[in-house]
Amino acid sequence: MFWEQNAATNFLCVQLHFLFFVKDIFIHIIVNCKYMYYLQ
Image (cartoon, rainbow, N blue to C red):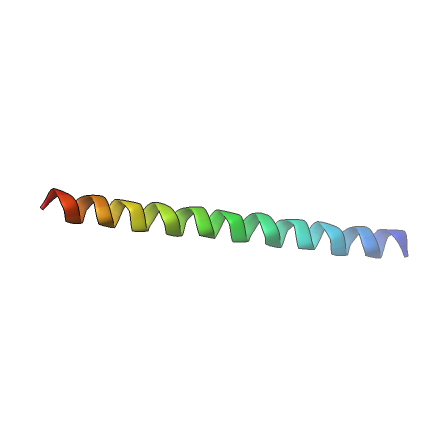
């Protein structure tokens, strides 16, 4: 029971880290695109 719960918690943590990672990349791309757009 403990190990199953621990595995589920680790899975949720990994998912959260992945979501934050994707969000950071998304924001980075948007900022870069706006920056390039303003440079033109």
